[in-house]
Amino acid sequence: MTAIRPAVEAKGVSRIFQGAGQDAVKALDNVSVSIRENEFFTLLGPSGCGKTTLLRLIAGFDYPTDGEILLHGQDIAPLPPFKRPVNTVFQSYALFPHMTVAENIGFGLKMLGKPKAEIAARVDAMLKLVHMQEQRNRRTSQISGGQQQRVALARALAPQPKVLLLDEPLSALDYKLRKEMQIELKRLQHETGITFIFVTHDQEEALTMSDRIAVMSSGNILQVGTPWDVYDRPAERFVADFIGETNFLTGTIESAGNGHARIVLSSGARICATAAKDFQLGSMATLMVRPEHARLVKGTGDLAGTIETIVYFGTDTHIHVRLDGGEAFIVRQQNSRCANCGFERGDKVGIQIGDDAAQLLKD
Amino acid sequence: MADRFDVRRQTGFASMAMMCFFLLYLPIATLVVYAFNDNESLAIWKGFSLRWFHAAWNNSLVIESSIRSFQIAAVAAILATISATMAALATTRTKPYRGLTFKYAFINQPLMVPEIVTAVALLIVFSRIKIWTGYSGLGYLILAHTAFCVPFAYLPIRARLESMDLSLETAAADLYATKWKIFRHVTLPLLWPGILAGLMLAFVVSLDDVVITEFVKSGGQDTLPTFMLGQIRRGVTPEINAISTVFLALSIGIVTAFFFISRKRT
Image 1: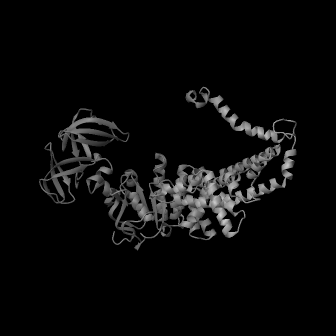
Image 2: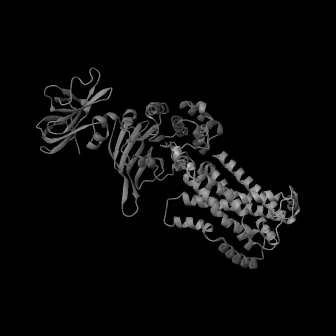
Image 3: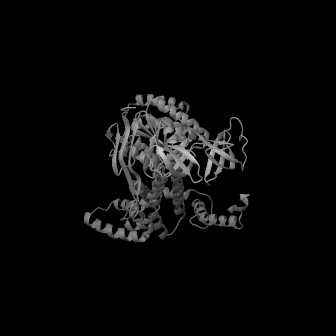
């Protein structure tokens, strides 16, 4: 992993929107991130976290209040959008309604002043890439939402940009089509070898598609890492909470060292958790356990409690347990063998936590 | 279900609607029917004839003033539409700022200021300019018509610009189009129906104007409406009906044509 040249780099980028009166909104607050060549990079976060603002700064639709945006080492922050070798797939697709599918795809090349023959060849290749050859002379109003999505992709890819920006492009599609397009996007990224920067608020989408994810919240990047990193080794509580379902427990640190810590919960139960950094002995701390890393047992386990609700999900079952200390705790069991494995509402149960499944978090 | 609450089923709705249409169209229908009357009188029907159409056609004053009307309307409508397009772009493709509402009002001023006031004002200004420059051509009428046509052209163009998806222009910029190319390849083609609608409105409004024209025109510069006004003062024959009928047919023809052109474009 040494010396991979970054495709896009943000260095101390801030974007402050001057509101009416005194209150200014910091949409981005001194953000730095480095996106590698040929990477499927996702900006993930709730609405208003600044992910779209960052994308717009890279595209050139907006300019940073402070900081640099480098494209292959060159500062592009002051350039207008038409001078950046970066193309965008818009959330609304923004297809030109007065042009055919083929004219839409060829638009960027036409604006670049490419010869007609080259444009025609490139449009053909793009139509083939997104399987839209038969619709080439249709108006964009005459094709379905999924097809519009493909045209928007082809149009953005046709000028062979160095980076493709995707602004929640799948949010308008229904569930099944969205799943299909997720695979399609991965395929396109693989075939074209272009760096994709993908914006989404859908954590499942981010986990399944990305090479790396940047989790954002209120104008800051909290963590950058592989899907495994952000899911299994979240840097802080917000990341753990935003991505997937998590159980949080608070307790006092009893002993620490060697990347591990022992925590005493209010009920007196003791749990051993991994700790990425050193924590102060005797201080309060939060630890997380993913529901699938815990297991219900009929005798005593690491934790004890009473089953409150059992929710059946088809592939798995979620069992909501009220711990003896009063905290809520969810256990997820695969339904491979039995539906709820003989557990009933009201049962006293133990919860077994897997090795290294509990993690101390920075608040 | 919902039909029971349909406004068309309410008591008195149908008769009220009929009465409105009656009041609107009966006078026009009467005018058109009597254009074909074979009689000197407007009120007494004698028989079907096209003689008043012949009379109007052979009246060189009618033809002259008609041509003048169309010349003025065409030039004024085009000038007004160009200005209105620029004004609409300037007032919609910008971040809202203090004074923008004032500008809307300023552009639409001719809709609010009583026409007679504008007419008198133009008369005073133009008569002064006539003395200074010695020029007394159609330019004054064209300028006056352009001025009051601008808001009529402006409103449909602005409406079209406001309903346009702004991300289309952003997408064009993203796809290497400069500002001018965005306008040429995206904004203008999408704006075209609005521009045509504005042009049509401006043209019809100019064609139809009496008050301002009456005040601004020099001797021998009658447009068709002011010519007709002059005729009526001298006693009315069905020739007026015939001219009105042709005028009506032309207006309907123009409006319909523009309607179909603009519909095809969208």
